[in-house]
Length: 493
Length: 95
Image 1 (tube, rainbow over the protein chains, first blue to last red):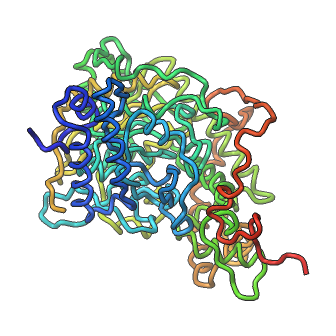
Image 2: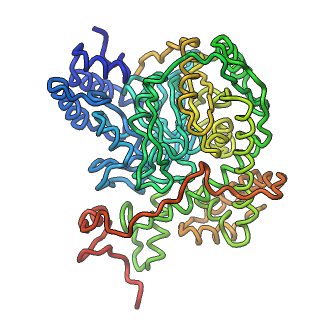
């Protein structure tokens, strides 16, 4: 039998169900891979006992005939999800040692469906970053390397960098991610895996450490479209504890998967052709268009006129919400406290926050505080929310003509660690193609398209109408069948 | 919008962030650059456009005004840096 780490979510579920191998064997194989993969720094906490307990429960359930949808599947959980009794840091010194006394709804849903937890996955601090370099617990390395023999350490993308690296290096069959402005899709593209951000409101935000609440959305990352559909089905669902949770039934996304997209109209937004994007990204996009045409879709050029304003609008709205959300880290109820000698309450707040937050988080808190401050609120925040309304309207008008949109996921392949650290705006530009769908709350997936000349993965993004995860998944499946992406990073770790 | 060092200190004060002189010197041009870049939003014609308030139309639900998860004092205090006598403890604020 092949190495069990060759098996993804569906294959483990089906293998356990059919008795080809035990859930315990699968969990042990992934625990061994996780431990052997420590050089990637993908996990910040390992929880082998959790994975093994779920596996033993799955093996017992098989005997008694009580298997659940994810029985026997061990998963990695991004460290943004509160996990009861297990350290949850959001990648920040501020929360080092914090052990939640409750479980996030999404991780709780996965565990109730029979999944176990291999460990908590590294990430950019408070999900603010596109390279995982803002984590207080060290960079995550991508398993991928350029084919020039130089072995330069590459970013797995961010903020879900540990999640992406773990799936790509086969240290987990599937993981959770979160996406505020591309944090599932960009790392998925950088590491040659698949990741979907569902419609805003599909997955409960309860117990997910908040960054920008009007944008934050959880989603799965895995090796293929089917595995993403399976995981999303278990993660999603109405939750009374989240005021923005959508009170809608969860569709049977996996059962309804179909790569038959004949007659679907797929829009190609012309504003996504921007200067400075490598020719290989355009070539991958053209190839993707050809594959979807081959699948029977009709390709239509569309216009999203306010695209160029999405990123600046995002960098007002997200920091504004972050500065409000992160006000809770005051050294009183949880997390770090730094108490200067002779200091009062305000000194404690200021010293705690100065010591607990990293540079990028401070930068965004400062921007957010500035744009919300007296005299600037209208010029910045209100203007950005109006532009956001126009961006959503652009999509609405495009979706009157087409069913889906196909775009690149990111404007480049993975870059080297340190290459973009000096210039915050250059780093922000990574999310230029991902942010518009976030601002409009739309479901969007990244699927691997191929390798560039340096041997690094490139991804394309499929965006759908609100609540049309099925359409997105189906088109992604048709794409996946044609792309036949089987490349993987050679193990060096 | 150019952000000078005095402005940086004011914003840091509002955000309850202690900043060193070195951080202030670094943040002033960084914030100026970022704010200069986002100011391109000013060129968008937003006449008659209402600011977005909900990204996906949703009903604002009300729940019953009842205790759902009460009597968990110790759990609430479990992660407090300092808890005393069943309360969160903070430095003395009244002389």
